[in-house]
Image (tube, rainbow, N blue to C red; front, side, top):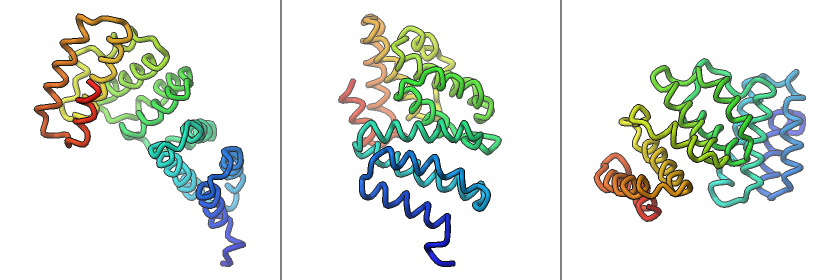
Length: 218
């Protein structure tokens, strides 16, 4: 097959060129919206992989300080895939993907969409973690919408302790500490800071590259 005649290769190439040349967000969005038009000739799996390719570029751009426009674009991808009913194709969804999607909805201030996503897909989380992870997502949305006490009410519960996931346990505690600070509940805040500092000093399950920035923040 000639390169020019292969639709799938052309789509990948267009996505690659647009990002490497730092083209306008509008052109990237136009490409994304055009992808489903090829459903008659390209398999659903290939279309999902192509969206994943664009998603990974957005994630990398966001992590490397590429600007809020890539975070907005990433959320637009999630929205668009949800509209096409191909965002979550498997019976189960990973904790990481679930929280990434909720986090992007929160950062883009799309709180209603985030809560709807939790209600729709929370049942697809791993069986033992369904309620806890859904609650983490809700706590995150409440925090970003400045409903700090609602976030505290959900997250400040012993049943929310993540014994086997220290990164998630760290994130829960950092969010709680921020919420206590925002609500000026300093009597709760100071002991929580000391407790979490102690956790970060003693844990052997987290690398110093992770614990040191969190200790400095606290």
